[in-house]
Amino acid sequence: MIRMDTTEQDAAGRARRGDRGAMESLYRQYQPSVARLCRQMIESEDEAADAAQEVFLRVLRSIDRYDPVLSFRVWLFSVARHVIVDQLRRRGKWWDIENDLRRLPPNYAEESLDPLLRGESRERLREAVQRLPAPYRLVVIAVMWHDFTPSEVAELLGVPAGRVRVHLFRALKLVEKELSGP
Image (cartoon, rainbow, N blue to C red; front, side, top):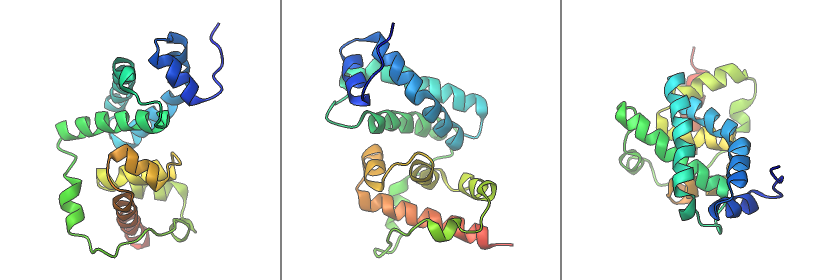
């Protein structure tokens, strides 16, 4: 019988030491979220399912490199991000975020989601987010639907938190522009 884990860190630590039950527990806990993220970022249902499976295969192969000081959730989603970016690059749907960010004014700041959400149907909002360029969509999805903080997203992407806030601000402006259109 698999013991129920009290924390993700405990389960991740045990999985790192080779406890198969702990790895299975982490899979059951996080597979739905990883699969949802893959579906939100990759347009093809089949490719998204393949990507979600690849995430857990990579986690299984590299769990010994997981640093228990870090959040397992952030590390897992970082692995997912790499798998998603690899898939999108192969399809020519990802671009260099750094080049795009260099064109932004230096005074961009984080804004609240509340004004954007007021009066909009969830479906319309979801469709607008799906039309965002992949780098911005990843930040919005992580913050809005997976409850990551900008700092956690920064850790996930390996970029400064200020850059994540810029991504979020710019993405929300694009969504706002689309929602205010005809």
